Image 1 (tube, rainbow, N blue to C red):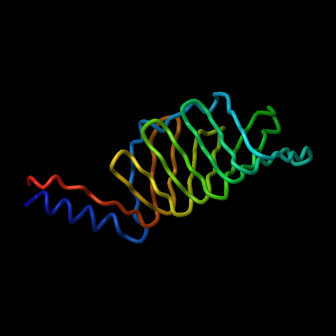
Image 2: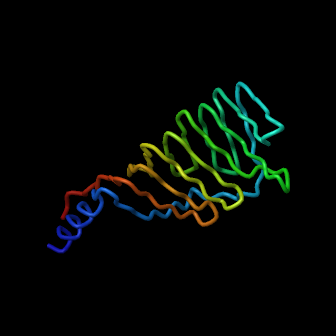
Image 3: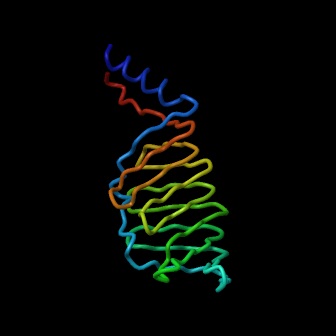
Length: 160
């Protein structure tokens, strides 16, 4: 009986309009100071604004983390000249060894190590899937939080 009540509460709380859930994404951790490798069909650089825009089949790698998108705007730090932020648009896919996520956009702040996926986020971990409007990942710790109409399906083994 307690399992049933717990499951019902989890489902009710998980479908609230502004629901949030915290997820431990052990596979989605990266060193924000590691080298960033970018490949794309096109590159446009604006020296005045300190930005570069990669477009067309963009793939970014940093350690075990892979991010692909239609377009990625790179913002450089004024003080160091290092990459400070990556702004990905036009359909974003994030992949590690054990997780995959899809979203409309992604904002990766390399200074803080925070990656924010927004717009119809879908996270898969093995057979499990969660969806929400936004997911924020701390790549230093591997912790993530999903918010905005969080949904999931709990698989039952049929033996209880």
